[in-house]
Length: 399
Ligand SMILES: [Zn+2]
Image 1 (spheres, rainbow, N blue to C red):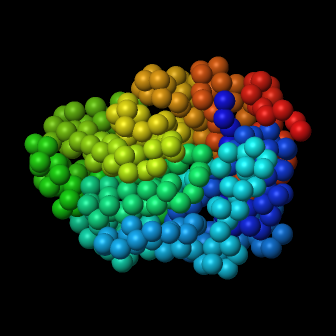
Image 2 (image 1 turned 180 degrees about the vertical axis):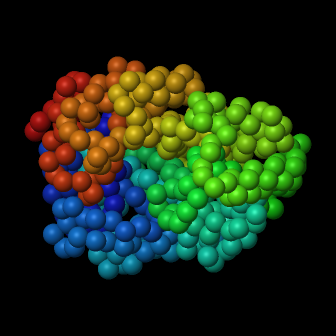
Image 3 (image 1 turned 30 degrees about the vertical axis):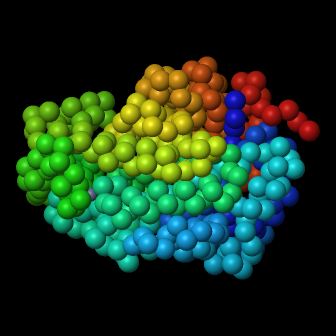
């Protein structure tokens, strides 16, 4: 089993690499760290940083140095974060420290969720049924966005000996995600969120048409359903069982149903292209949400074209974690399934709940865990991680 924790570059730099390695390998009993190497913006409370308590990173930058001219002919190009210029190549330093300490260093990359690139290249962004541009998310159908994602992972894995790459948000995005700050006065329901997030950009419509799917007809349906929702005095979900039924809830709207299923094609084929262009020695894993169908994830198809799945079971209770892992493992057809568990309060209110989730996933046969997130939680919760892993017999031995 290989267990790691997600971390941001500024956390590693603020706390110091040696401290970070001691915390992760020694205190938490983990085998690896997964560093955010390409990410979007945010506003983070820095629980343990001795330098600050709030950090607002640059939007849509990368935290490694590109070495080749791989991006020279592309429409979209990466921007290296200022903190790498100012404070050094944190990924490279972490790789050296990890090698000394026997700590695997993975890279987590968000290629499509990028408002910097979205503002520079609105033609490549997702567009809802009303034509509104989601400038913080590039569309997985859009050729320029695809070329950027493929080149970024290829560049990273050619220049750095990371143990694995984790693809974050390499799909369509929801409208009401926590980091998108949509002010909603009507009480949008999960089905409204889904309908508003379905992309009908020209690239999607053309790609769907090529597959014999009538995106325009689906768009008309989505517009009508959303207009109906917006006209209600109070929220009234039409499909309260949506999480259970998935896309089949929309079976009575055949064009929309077909379009929702079709969305898996651009996502899966992009993962396949990214995997093919990356360094063959580096496993490429796909980070999936529990209800990933909403974002175009077909776990079985994705697992066939990459090297593993990281299933985020953040808000699931232990019994649900077992079912989710079991389902994902069956879909993954022998490819490793890792579980992402968040250490956030109030989702996690003590060591016992974490131990229960870890035990459930271990029992289901998970390949390892990734915990969220090193710099955002008090150090005491690293002890919860070790206790949970020890209870399941999967902790790294204490030094
Ligand atoms: Zn699109």
